[in-house]
Length: 254
Image (tube, rainbow, N blue to C red; front, side, top):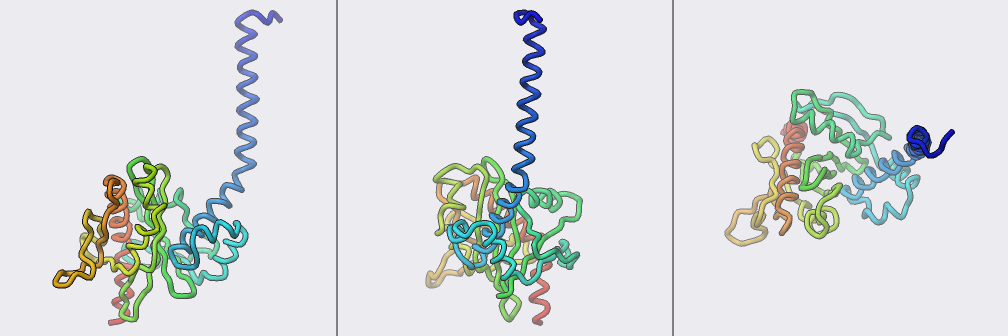
């Protein structure tokens, strides 16, 4: 065959493209199970960080197997609820909802389909629910841990936030700034109201004599308006969807 004609060039290029595509597909498939294991362990570490079992750095040092075992030791039950607050189904104790799975439920909450709202309850009584939404440049999500008081009030124990591509030093602070995440501790969402929770510029007065303290508002991140607004909308939307479930705790105590 004449290696200098166009037909040879086309055939040669097609063969190279096919071989490279096959290699990439093989590598992707080979790494898929490892990627899924990493995503699951990362999701669990975020949930357990929010719940106070350790820091994200602690779980990263443990490795996937140890993280999964720690979770198995601490989780008591997991189930899904609907927007009416009713339990729909039990979940296997090794089932978690990663960001990729939360994306679908986010569409369902905002659309006409019935969402599957996962609830995770640890043996120490901490209840964790996820949140998912849109930041400035991409998805943002978090896991919020609650302590249910004797009167049925759900108080935030902790929260862990993450993102896909927020601006470094600004929107990325939802993940990188422990002080921002600490602001959520002790806050009490106003379940059943139009605005369940709010992230606003200036926040709400805290320990200021003569001023009303609002327990469902925190201060937004300075210089990250769009990320703060996106997170505000995501938390309000998702906790709004969980409202009836959390209100049932209060009703049980009456």
